[in-house]
Length: 121
Image 1: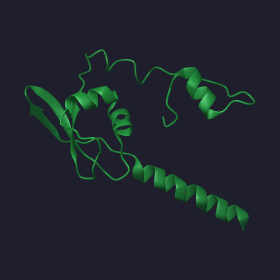
Image 2: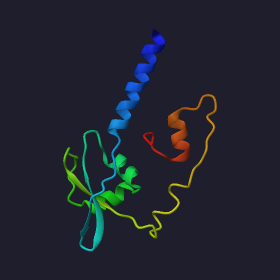
Image 3: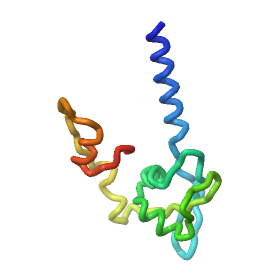
Image 4: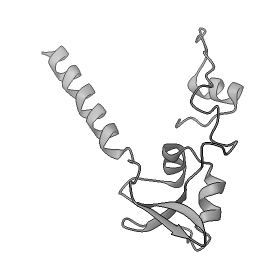
């Protein structure tokens, strides 16, 4: 009985994680000669998650949305700059990996500090 409860809890958590992931928008617009995706903010999304989803930095998002207030609101529309394949920011991100074998006593926090990455990646 315990195993059934444990398995159902795992699938419930997995479903919650999948539903909060943001999807890339297929809508494209051209504003002032630059191409952008239009992204509608969904519940639970933040700038960091959106920037990772589109392969951008948070700075790229903030520069493209200079009218952005201090808080995001559900339904708000963000301009997502489309990075061309010739743009140096677009190259190497997906093929660049570092493997780490966790050693006894290491925590997620200590590993994140070692590689200078945030915990929510």
